[in-house]
Length: 234
Image 1: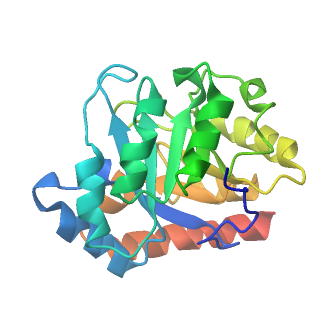
Image 2 (image 1 turned 135 degrees about the vertical axis):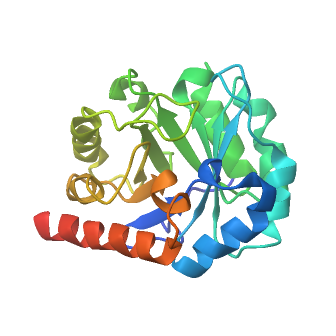
């Protein structure tokens, strides 16, 4: 089994921006990804939905494989699927750098995390808004990232759920000496990103805040300014 590394790769203390391609124009996906890379994104977030665990269908490993050829950014694959153990290896082989599974989607979370590491990827665990942080207690020493959903998963463009602030703060206290990253996904914009950073979040999944902007570089610059405000508040 691959030993978990405390070196978490493409990490910045100022925070990482991971635009979600769920909000991109799928008719020209390669161009969209290249545009946000040129605009200053840190990661590319890939929302994988199976129509069963969440009420929507999106993309599979072939899309990840195609993206790998057009971007040098890490591919952050969020598997909102039932039986994630069936999909870890295909996404790893396609080029995923990070694979995140939902704690609610499997009864063998420890096993799936180890499976992700054995596939040479970083392992994340995601929690839905109504899922307690206690679901993580037995795996905090083996995860590379915890993803807090600040909307109910399934669709882009939703409104941020306000009690996510408190959930991020509580997770940050639980983190202690564990070296995992805290990622937040859903309704993030320039107005709330700074507070999330000040509470301990490290990675910010942004969708419409970037892809709906006419000028992606300006949108990312505004988000960076919000992150700077969060750093001053810490």
